[in-house]
Length: 457
Ligand code: FCB
Image 1: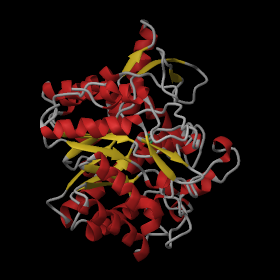
Image 2: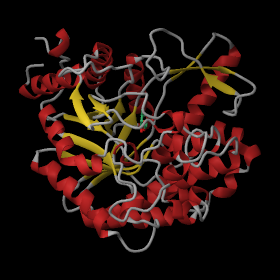
Image 3: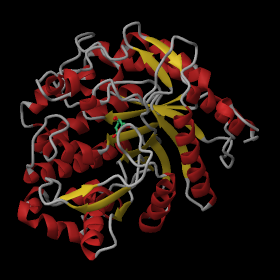
């Protein structure tokens, strides 16, 4: 059986598998001054000169705030069973604390209802990088109080949406929130090479995750919750002891630093030794690791690529760097490594035990162009997604409990500091007209979902 693009279906998925797409609030919503929304750190950052490519911001982006019904119809056309989106904290709590902004809550409430009417399970993420600016003004994630504010915000969302939402994610990619924002300076608030702050932020993110899990247990005991780190299998670039060490440290820095505390209630020893010079342990108080390791129901895995690591003394990232190894790369300059997804899933099972897994993001940017026709053909993306689904189906056959898969992304959108040039969507967005045009990959994915659901894939 073949689907759109002449590509074979990928077999091996259970009939009730969660077929999805993922988006995030700041990247698609626009309407930054509407409905009582307060500013977030990304509004501030994207308006600072020199922070983003071509100075682009997401003031309008896909204008999903006004187009959400049309977008939900696109999801229904694909036959999706799950939609992973994020809630903009500053839309529902403009100052990050205090009373709810009812207009903001209504937006998400209507979205949830609209999804359910279309047979799509809502799968919200509480934090996808857009801290209310008012909290940043009080120190942001560096300030331990922000963990309490997050728990209050989470509890308010469980209260207001939890009668219809059963599946939650606390944080999207805490590694990015901590290290790309406080070491690499690519993400808001854009601080360079401040390791003590970055490490404190990473701990506060994890603590806030644990407090939100506890709030869910108290308020909505039957609902399910997890966290969605970006996970990258690591390899030494060269077959040398130096690169072997580099790969081990990168693995600790990016993967184990987040997985070990959540699953084992302890930071990895080798990384604690590595970070001793930054005074990390002062941030950790009694009881924090118990909160962080509150049992979760699922792990979200954002998987983009495996990395090859080597030394680069002037890199702020511990003097290490990840180097692309093979052509073709995606437009982000990332290696295409579907077997890395299989490797990572088996490793999670081996090191952290059996846990339900959602692939909360996987996808690729390619230089799509619209010629005015009805479909934007993107065979590279079909190839990318189908090869990752093959790896996923192999992991399922190998006994990993994978419950769902979300393509990043439904729509082309604002790719953070890289602006609009990077197109990840199943639908092409013509920004001047806000028209959505299906790409070949959308049609292929629709056919894949239908075949899998019919049991014929
Ligand atoms: C991930 C982010 C997501 C998007 C993709 C391409 O790191 O979670 O918002 O930018 O990368």
